[in-house]
Structure formats: structure tokens, C-alpha cells
Image: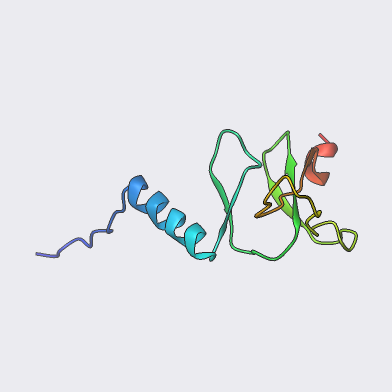
Length: 96
């Protein structure tokens, strides 16, 4: 009698708790680009994101002007991070 291999399972709660731990430790970054879905980025370097409003794909944008991620000096706020997001239609969806 042959045994069938079983695939281990993880609950969504375990996955999201682990992702939250990664965010807390600085291994990934949680993105605020998508209102409907939780999105994470393993590239924590300074870059922007583009989200296609047609297909929902997210792309990294690295060719930004120098200094765009520099934090402004102000006495009224303590800024911890900057997120730059662009929205529009990707190259693939433009033709449709």
C-alpha cells in the first residue's frame, strides 16, 4: 500500500503574522498602494511604485530624481518613512 504525500498547510493568520514580523524587523516593507489587498515589498531600498488601475500589477520605479526621498526638515512632524506611488495604465493594458 503506497502512502500519498501530504502537503503541509499554513493558515493565513500565520502568514500575515510572519509578514508583520518581517516588517517590524525591516526585512520587508508593507505598501499602502492597494486599498483592497495587503502588498509587501522585499526591496527596501528607496524607490517608488506604479500600480496599473486596469490589471492591478505593481512595478518598481528606480529612475527618480535624486533627493525625492530626502525628508523635509520641519519642526511640526517626525517623519519615519516616505512612500511615492503612481497610478495609471501599464504598457500591457494600454494596447487593450
